[in-house]
Length: 96
Image 1: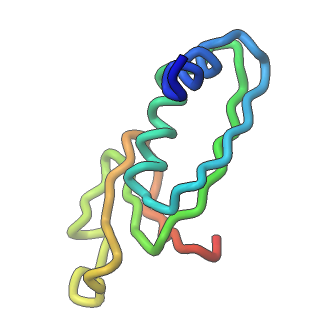
Image 2 (image 1 turned 90 degrees about the vertical axis):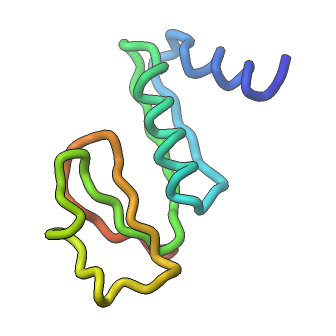
Image 3 (image 1 turned 180 degrees about the vertical axis):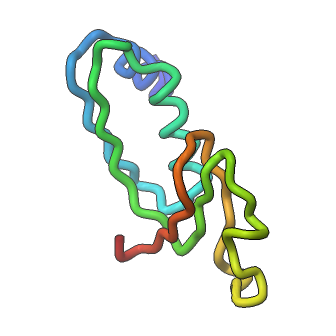
């Protein structure tokens, strides 16, 4: 069975607690995994997903990036990305 197949089978299993640690520092990859875990995890399970991203700004689904981010100070290497869940705007970097 492929790694993706084993991961999918593990995520949907009725095991009560799951802990995952991402090896990626890419915000898009980590938010995609987070969303997948949210969508596919067994409803009775508790999931802890740990990750650290390269410098980026993550905004909630209902936030306006033009009012939340000072675009004149934003450097090219800092991504602005929207997560599917709500909540405020947060800055991520390799130190948090």
